[in-house]
Length: 442
Image 1 (tube, rainbow, N blue to C red):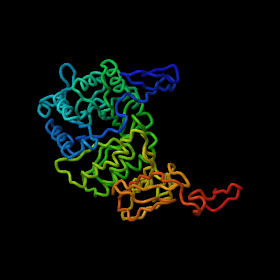
Image 2: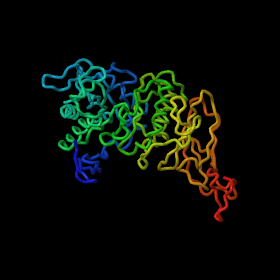
Image 3: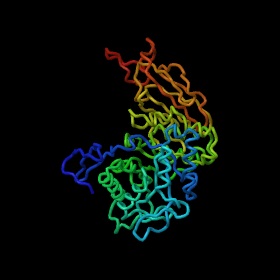
Image 4: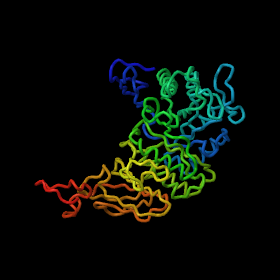
């Protein structure tokens, strides 16, 4: 455990200043340690291949990311998920790569990925075993962190399977994950090298969005995604209530992308990608890139959507300002919130999500969003059609939004609205009040 006798201290870690805030006897670290300020973008093997992975697949995928323009679009990580190891540690107690599927060794793999301009990610588990029965890191945290560093990895996804008995672990989930977080911190300090990007995969079982930022750079908030609209809508619904947990260096992780997988339509895939990106989730592609259709590739390469995910000035997520189908603050995994907004360095981004099984017009008053100023008009940029669509005054209607489809808009202040508009207040009836005290209709 980390201890502190004062409320706020400053710590220098590998040349980086880190704020620590005391909570009782415990110090809470805001993981501003020089890595993963922005959501990680890259590739993860699990959704497409599960355990059917080897060294050649990883390099082939990296080459495809280059040739398809994904690396240029910002996808800079290639991450190996579960099943890369032998079933047993070495006689010295170290993790060992599969002798057939990773016969050239992990240092060779990371060296090739680095030569191609990518960062390399690996998978581990906080318990006795990984979810597919390979060695976990419980009671071997420092040893395994050193191994990952020696092999040249930059990123660690850390799962939550094979949890030790209570009378062995004697900890809560925060404490279980803190073991590896401490090992990573200590190793960065002793080695002088950047710390591993630490991705917690705790599935949201213990409200990780409250404490995850003390330990890592992202944290899974739900159980695993699936290649279906119902899975996307359910995850989106859950995360609509915890958007405030995301900011620079710490992000709610909505799970790996399913764009290109299953039977999702192009419109559903657009909605999936838009929501994940604008909510500042990590963006990890999880489809077979050798067979990806152009329509799905175009979704993954939308530079205007990606620019908001990677905004260097504003790190926060979009949040709902109106639910739409349901009353506000209603949890509904079939019809999650439909009207969202948030600040960006270039204006206010708005996401309109049609959760219905038919096309629909979607109308909102501009000042329903807390980021829009009353009495102003706004230029409208469509982030999917890549067109400038005039100026919105008071309200906006997106016509015929497809079933499970999305509209993403960037609204920029374009000056005062025209004089003499009625009603006097676009939204705030019945408290729209003249300066003489007379209440007028809003």
